[in-house]
Length: 276
Image 1 (tube, rainbow, N blue to C red):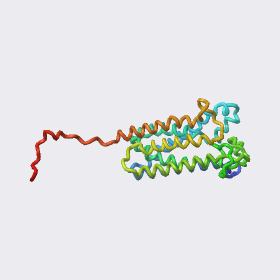
Image 2: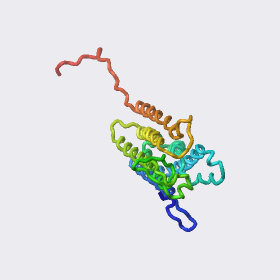
Image 3: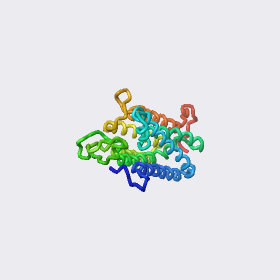
Image 4: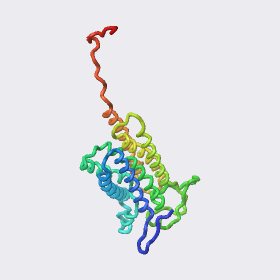
């Protein structure tokens, strides 16, 4: 596509960086808007989420470095490509969750209701961010002959992230962006369903994402190593996160279930008169 958006003298503006910034801003906007609608101070949420965004950036890069350790440590030139690479979403998500928990405790905000407010913003940001992957050529798919295949031709994509050029590939970036849209719509619809409970939106997001990511990984073509010689790192995390999400949904639904009404012993209760 267009890894380099434009050059301004010695400064190069990359499409991925612009869309990544747009992804975080979109997610932040939706989260703050939902927080205000719930009666929470938007400034407190803004401060909290800025730290979460920083953690997500660092965590995504850190997990990418671990997954592709041999590549990034092979030479200084390869290590510097880490700065141009997008990172692993799961790494960013895990780091963001840990920092978010700390910030929620610091700001004295309830954990699961706050997580429910933020979850749709994560899905929106993911949807926009994956378009940045498409522009950069990273997270590319396997060769294919499907009618909707895409072909990268820009040498900058190959130089920055090793994208195969002039080869028809699965548009996995679009698959993942579409997954983000599906999750966003599903969460907003789910919130309108009866019998809500704290944590339902967040753990529904986690479950839907783990399932869709597990499936899409089969079409990814970039080499990131395997866990147990079978699963990619993201699939391995999905295998853990999916069942965990279902367990948490079950647990939280029971914890929020209203107590059963008291049963009174009617056998020895005084009989009411038939007529009054």
